[in-house]
Image 1 (cartoon, rainbow, N blue to C red):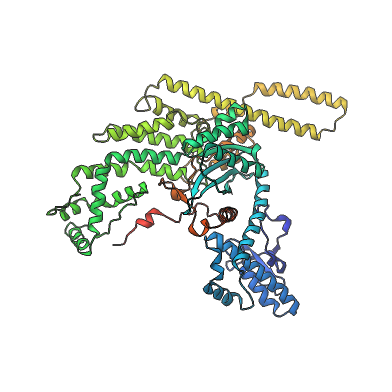
Image 2 (cartoon, rainbow, N blue to C red; image 1 turned 60 degrees about the horizontal axis):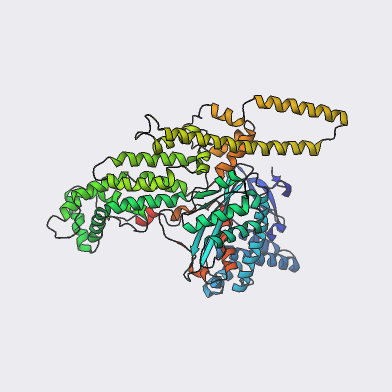
Length: 631
């Protein structure tokens, strides 16, 4: 028994349709295990083939050619044209997905591969055709994405960061973050324009505003997350004037600083105070690896002490997380190093103080590493966890700030912490309250640690009490704005659909007034939500805050709309693979020589197709893999 899937029932987000589907029907048939799965049934021979996911349509096109060899020559030529069109499109997709140069298709090896795979009758596209196909595909996909963004039920939040190229040209990456009607968090790169120097606040604001106008989404703007450069502060001020005018509340909630960047500043400040200990351990590891004889001698020391022979990794100094991985690997071999250097005059032999510092550092940065990874993700909500992570960081600074030898380091990091986080960013404080596991309690704890006693559990300072009161007022003000908006939409809907007589209208008005009067005496969504105890959840499975709000949408119709917008906010501008480094993001060599409009098309298309495949968070530079060495 099979089911033919009508096109009208396909998901709305399915974006493209290959010409090869003229020769296949989408059906549901059992697989080898008996499970019903989607298949592509050939209209000529009725054989069913898999499709979707990573399978693509190339194999369908080749099957169509083979089938039509048994049909008329004209029919075969029609299918052959479809195969060529399909394969040309797939070549374009391969090009931007793997960041290959356009002239790749002109290489003899590539053309030989195509000829062997598809037959000598298929001629691969030239690089000019590839470029034109990419630009055409970009226009098609951009139109589809524009329609998606128009239908987003809540606000769209944005991140922007600057890139460079080997030609020293500047580019700006603008990314939209939104929650769709199914309460799924999405992100899409919507623009990648070249930004001429100098990168002033005016130039940045004008480029961002121009792109928002071009996408026709200025009315949906929620927040903008930028790094901490001074020119970005100027850009934010200009954008507030352009987007919000005198709307003070939206102006207050607009700007979010990149918190992964702030963590980098904290960690680097701390490491500067123990740099000599790090240098001694780093140089010792490097010294062991300078020759095979020294490495063999190190292994012999391992054998004498009953330790496993191991090649210890050296950190990548532009990646602070790799420094802690180096320490984690080296610390168990402290006695091996002592034995190895027993009769040595090496200048960087680690002292007991160095090893003691390393032991503390090994435990100390875990919260920073975990926070950076959490802040840098894009497939899950980060804003609701902001105060939780800040509380953990503040707690670590308090714990180690009283230990001998680390007070100066922790005091330095605390100064940086206070500069950016002592006054918790308003919009992230409100977003943290939208996590039903914590509600106001996590905000109160974070404020206690920032302004109260050293333990965070004793008498809270007056300043902390004043702060929590101010945040509660802002939370209520924001809720009232959403309440007006939701009620206005409901009233407009009733007026648009009303077809009552004059007498009935009078009754409707009277009923409406009574209903409004009774509503005023009831608790608001916000008050009912805060009055309920925090949600108790088991450690597993992992709690999904969006699924919780989706289930509670009918219970809290106004508050859920507010929660949707607050939970959309990204707390970082950087992707996970670059979150631990202060280095610039660089356009690849093969792209930097192209025209700016082609670079933009390639960057956007890669992101859009990765999003469709669920690969936006793929990390090609896993630091633990890079540092792993076999014994």
